[in-house]
Image (tube, rainbow, N blue to C red; front, side, top):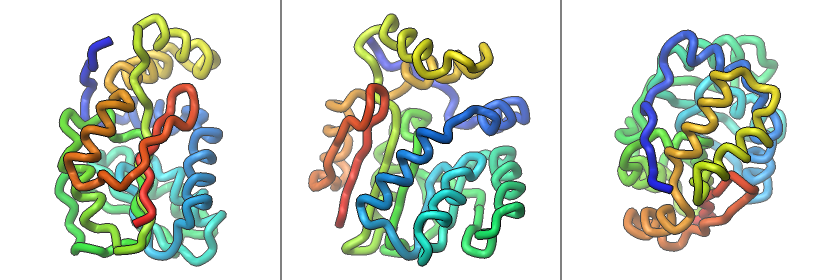
Length: 216
C-alpha cells in the first residue's frame, strides 16, 4: 500500500495525554533491550522522546549513562518533565525542546544516539538520519527503531486488532495511521544508504517493528 502521511507533531493536550496513557511498556522494553545488546553507554541522546518513558528505563538498566531527550512537542515534554521529576534517576536525565531535523549539538557529541517511532512522523527523514549520524561519536551506538508499513490495509487492521485490542478508538486509529505512514524495509535501506548509513543494518525486529542499527 502507498505511504499516507500523518502530522509530524502530536502537540495537543489530548494527543499527549492519550499517547502517555497507552501501554507501550513491552515495546519500550524491547528498545532498551536492543540498546543494552548493542553496548549503548555514556552520554546518550533520545530523539523524539515524547513523554519520556524510555530515558527512565534506560537509566534503570545502564548505570553509567546520562540521557538527553529532545522533542518538538512542548506538550509531550511537559509530561516527560513530570515523569523525570518523580524518577530516582532524575539527575541523569534532561529534556529539551528541539527539532530532530536541525539538532543544536556539535558533531560527535554523543556516545549513543537512539529514537523510537518518530521516523514515520517525518515526511522526508533524510535530514533526521543525517543529523543522528552527525552527532554520534566514532565508535558509538546508533539505534533508530520504528514501525514498518504492511503490504495491505487489511494487514494493518490485523496488526491493530492484535496489538491494540484493549485500546481506545483514538489509540487504535493512531496506531493504524502510524502503520500507514511508516516506511518499508526497502525504503529504509535506500534512505540509509543515501545519508551515509550504508554500514548500518536494517533489521525487522517483530511483526511491525524495524530498526536501523549501527555500532560505529
